[in-house]
Image (cartoon, rainbow, N blue to C red; front, side):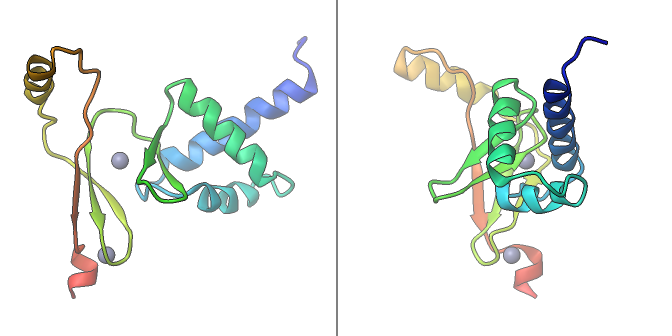
Length: 131
Ligand SMILES: [Zn+2]
Ligand SMILES: [Zn+2]
């Protein structure tokens, strides 16, 4: 093997970060991911987690969900899908309804542009907070 220890370590850390994200449906923040990854890699820094999240996003392995707040949420599910955001507790859930690809055509027709994808967020109160 000619892989240098440094590259090997980076790749392993990235894999752990990806595994953490694939195993949750909670759409966590970078801080939450950092706390989880630290259980396996105690000496990892928050900066390293951020850097690897950026790489994973660029490679198309994860999605970054920006809600206009100061922090992003991350999603290990890269297939097109919609989200329900609880206005009370801030939980973000996947909604397993068909993605309306016809909307892309309508939007492209109206704008004369080319639609790559669309995002749809439902906002409300989750069942846990209603109770
Ligand atoms: Zn809630
Ligand atoms: Zn999702």
